[in-house]
Length: 308
Length: 255
Image (tube, rainbow over all chains, first blue to last red):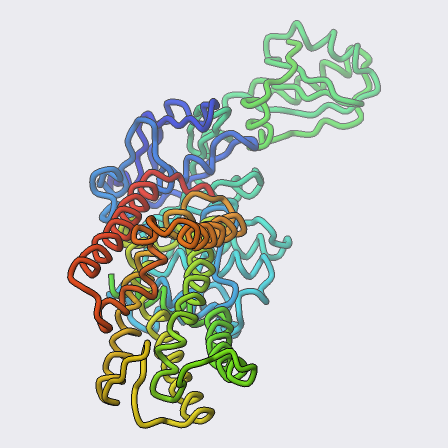
């Protein structure tokens, strides 16, 4: 079955002061995606989310959510959207229940029990009547997610959802996102500086640098590359480089302290090992390395030192 | 729209500020007793006319309440990031801002009602109910006095809401509620000082009508005075409201 496009940004631009924050940004998110939106600090991720949600005006370009243009049909576009932008914000003098009640009031179609339902989903039902000012940051993140889920959204924007969470909390949020995407067919648009997290939870990723989209691809394409990487740990770095640099199976060499990261054709690691050993280079370890999102991200946003 | 207004009213009454202002109004209602004891009141004061005598005082407290509340519900909410929440759930910017100002009618009415009841009670207890309603040297029947008092309190809402629109416009300009509140109080003092120094500009100052508008309506104001007061309140209120809507629609919500 064809996936429907739930979010489409087309050539959006934004300048704040004299700085071009977002430049000609276009991307699309399909139904059911858990879409990771990555970029270094100041890349324009949060500004993009704010433009998508109509909180700040675009200089040019257009955004469609569920087929509705946010400029001309904002209410219908935003109708089935949930969002947590930056750290979730609440009225601290009100309880979690009343914070959600204020939002539920704006959705008259919601049954009264919906607040209890979402609090149950995020594990805060027992603290529903506590004032939010007594909540930890982790609890506020959960409550933010509860608020985003309140109106049965088809698309949820989460801006750095793991901010302030301890490792256990991060795992729980990740599991919650995966479960909601799977069981309730919710599409997620997630920004995060935690690349590992995006790698764990997202099926697609877009990388932003200085307001420009560098790449957009399914996560599985990252691991389906024609090349693989191995880390060669040896005390003879220079000799190893000399031997490897002329070989056609070697695509790139990245020297590190005490080791080399070598990008080679898939399935050639055994040959590499034999080659080095036959040339009297002692190989302490040869460790296969899947190209992680982090490496890919650094490669794209900073560039790497290539020898070969 | 009514749900947005209900939300705003709920938030106002969920905070301590309004209760502090309620206490202030009750405490200020006791001031005439001190003035009387000091001998600085040279006219008849009783339970019937104390509420009207105190209306000017109450109407100088409520503008402060409006400044503090709008600083909180607009500037503070913007900076703390909660102003955007209704916008993410289908509320338009125009409706949100309109709801914020309309919601103020409820606490203002409550404060005025409390002030009126407190002064009736304190006046009757401290000075006795009295036989007549005496105001500015004129004597009225008790029923007329009560109706005029109630009408004066009720119609005070109009100039106060026009003033609230001005404050809303100011609050949208500042990135912090401290600056917004300080500027608004500064404006209130400036207008008050300007009115005292230059008699001719008094009819064009909104603060003049906190007291003068009900006074004109119920105690012998002529048609020209009433018309001018309505025009001044309309100009302050409507232009500030429209200016606020215009600004808010263009504002980037960066928090």
